[in-house]
Length: 129
Image (cartoon, rainbow, N blue to C red; front, side, top):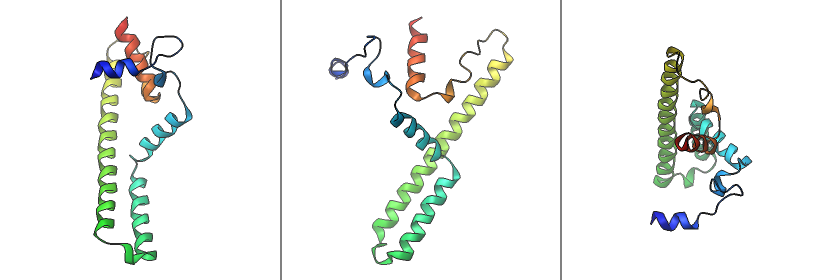
């Protein structure tokens, strides 16, 4: 199955990586920003405000399905927040290790500010060398 996927993946002009990794598009940056924004507490306030408006203006459609939808949104935000917290903790620990070890290279210290595709590309290049 993996082989079938690999044969369908075309290569970029330089022949080194798939096309989907070749360009850092505005859509990719927007999705990264959206993922970061959903990890903030204000995202929960947006969902709660949405629920309040739903109750205020369309109370007749607010049924068990509506409650289930809101619960799914809230749980998604809680999971996103937890993952973001864990990732930030790992980054803080790694940054401290880089500062503590004089022999460590700090070239990648700010890579967490890059887009995910750029990070994947950097990891692939490091593994090749």
